[in-house]
Length: 230
Image (cartoon, rainbow, N blue to C red; front, side, top):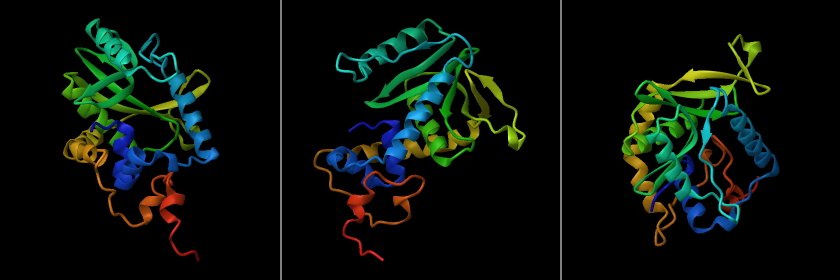
């Protein structure tokens, strides 16, 4: 089965997490503070869309409020064919494996890829995210130049900030690092797809450090319910 970039990042943390997402999502518990952080990240990303000026967003909703992926894929294709300078939430699919790129900015005959994260630091999972996007976009025939992270800027640390839409941003070139993770994605993407299959057996992974790093798993309570308490 196909995977999204969210699937991939979660599976890289723990393959059992991906299996539970596909087979027992009703066990998922997202703490309110985590949901608040996710919402703040979405707001930060929405403001960043116009950081390079005029842009076109592909986000399209169905009548029930869910994302219309087919419409987004078609709109992205049309925008690329037209040579649109800045595309936000560009949608791409390769063998069903799906991703949406936060910002694509025309860079000569190619496009530069920007991923927006509401934090001041570069993390491994962000580079995995970009690596996934790079693979899918390249497989879709999109010529890519550089890859960047758009992060929250910390002036107190002496960073050069870009003030925009009431926020302070910094842009970091992570092309080399994201290319390295692109190779990891290429080697694992179809392996992770098999974990999502209906008849797949849940990976036998004991609880451990991966339950909390880089994020506490949303199935933490389920996986730890039979563990002895201190």
